[in-house]
Length: 593
Image 1 (tube, rainbow, N blue to C red):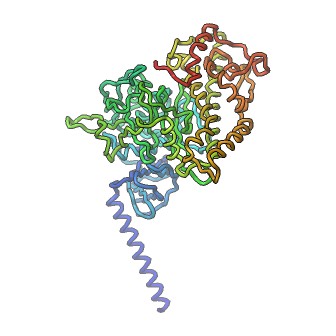
Image 2 (image 1 turned 90 degrees about the vertical axis):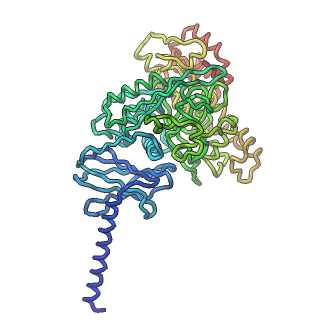
Image 3 (image 1 turned 90 degrees about the horizontal axis):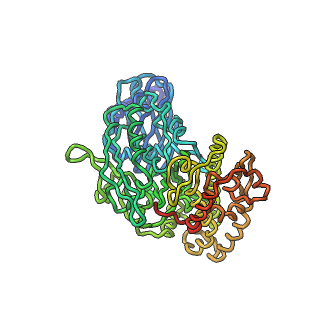
């Protein structure tokens, strides 16, 4: 072949490739749609030229591996992204500096297109409310939650309230989503029972979805809470809603829901939440965990087990002082017991769908058993003892099992994390008294110490201390757990008896090596080894009263250097009450309200 013919040949091949590329781009533009299990979301909903834009692709049928931006000339730009989840799986990308015009965003998996979404910069109002919840919006909600509370797994993630989380444009994909600076000065300080509802309502407001909630009782010693008919609010489905509209709806929620809303019976279908199966593919971020004593957490992320690192299941909760903290799943934070007065465990929000009358209705339990559009309804958790429940979750979190030392270190880390969270709570009480010297916080009577309003709710720690006592028990009884459930551990040639003895020896050494610091009444720091914290376990049975100094609340003994800075004590009648209630803590049993 002559040089001229070769040049012409290469030119012709290049021309054909260019034509093919343009044809593909035109075909892509013509068929730019979401028809499968992957959907793409753009934030803000009406993007502007030269302003930040975020893109999230969410899949429910497998991991995604690429995301591409195509302009109206067919030019493709691969996008950098952050990968999360599974399931659902998501890719998130940030753009800036795009000119006005029409683009397409494509998501793919191993070179295969999975979804395409048009992106119009400086176009007309394109906000379309979703009207009803479905698989795509549930997956988007889950991916949004995971991104909202994402951080390195070893980081102790904590916030003074939900406000700084939602006002962080890097965390919150929906920040200024409606384009009206609607997040500015938005007050959001939910407590533990309100947190899942607040997150759900905030998401519904931004995306344009209806919400439902019920007025519920608190139950009794022998019966779980019961609820009335659902209040269905469609205020957000009629186009872009104002901040005032959201604040009004959220205030209704805050005045209606409480810990009983999540503790409803597992078989009951007149509820906001229903129980789901204990499966990795079902327990998405956003799933709610209700413990039998009234505490509520929201799942945030699964961390896969690797050769070098145990797996983790992370969740967030809110406290009466409005702080929001991320913590790992373990027996010290996720309390489980099949009590007659509560339906505990993992639950999801009951879906809202179109009704024959043209309105909306919530789905019944039997409609959720084999419904591919929503999390599976399951009564599996009613059949499990506490021991079996934790063993089941241990296998989900670490399917390959754990070396006993790995298991011990993970449990110790979780306990230290829980103790450090208590440090913050006790210090919040000290801050209150520095601002209000000489004041005394009134102490409720009986079981109301666990759930009341006002300063006692904000600064006392009876529920947290009950969990701390349980958490200490979990760590110290780990050697016995190895004997009961050797199938959860990788023994590496050891017998369960040998592993038990070795962990007991390891425990005795490690609790002297780990420590925490708390702030004393005069502002100085005091170090406590974990061994000292564990030895003071009986003292935490009466250490929840904020009227007592921090030194007393950490178990310091009178006459010691540690105790010397203590100058505040609860009234004698409050100490007498705490002595009467001490049995609840010693037995790790929260009484029914």
